[in-house]
Image 1 (spheres, rainbow, N blue to C red):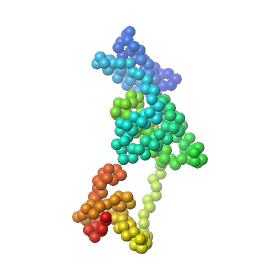
Image 2: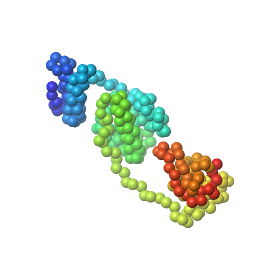
Image 3: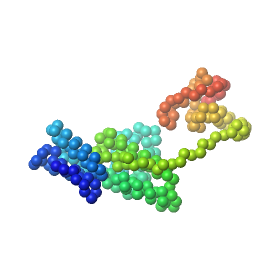
Length: 244
């Protein structure tokens, strides 16, 4: 039929099965999306298995549940991410997924940066960027799984640009003072863990979780890391370290 510009964007007006067939109208934010929809509908019709598209009326919290059931539970931080997504959905008013738009997100983001009604002060931009990343990733995953037929409403919207934080490090005198203090601790392990962290750049939890056979051949072997990637870091004299 035709693609025309309307008040809310671009409308695709299609009869995939030809004259006399069911007529489908769908409005998109951009002309490219409308053209893509028209091509897809006609392509499916030519294969003989076309069905009229149905409206997906699921609300955001329902989409979060589906995302977690299908994929989120496999992530190390899946449960925590689900909680963060649910809180974001509630602050947005739990709208229908099809009603979430880039403009709506930008307005929400602006409100968050202005003031959080729960704590009475602006939210850190990095926090809002995490909310952005989690929600966009949720839509992206559901699209890949063909659970969500619409576009990702946050696609193409840039996150807030943040200044890189100043790098902080310990001077040699500070390291000596730190190790001297830890040597007086009632827990002898903290001194060993601190030395491993300083020598390999490991997180405290990574060093604390080491077992003896992962220190060999003057290397420390880390597994089950935050990013799930194993790594080996050279370290001199690691055979002298005792980690239980």
